[in-house]
Length: 79
Image 1 (tube, rainbow, N blue to C red):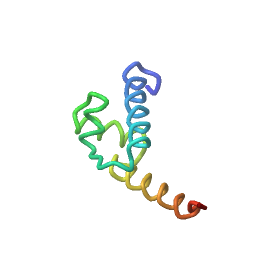
Image 2 (cartoon, helix red, strand yellow):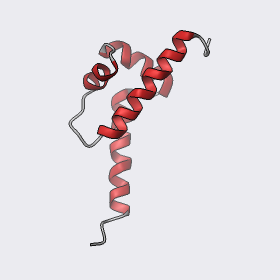
Image 3 (spheres, one colour):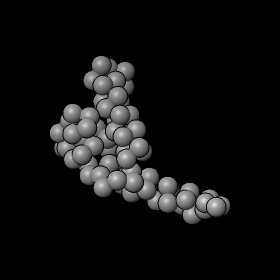
């Protein structure tokens, strides 16, 4: 059931992780760091993240970093 209390809590955890990764993607960041930040074990975090996003946390973080790099390349500082 997508609206169960467990599913809602998992969704909250995933959203917290997405926000944390977005804010800290330029830092040396591991999946264990993200899991610890939201108070989960690495394995449980990996499981719920993949279930909600259809990609692993590492895949998401890599994609996020590539997207950010492309944005920086597209809009160089005009100083």
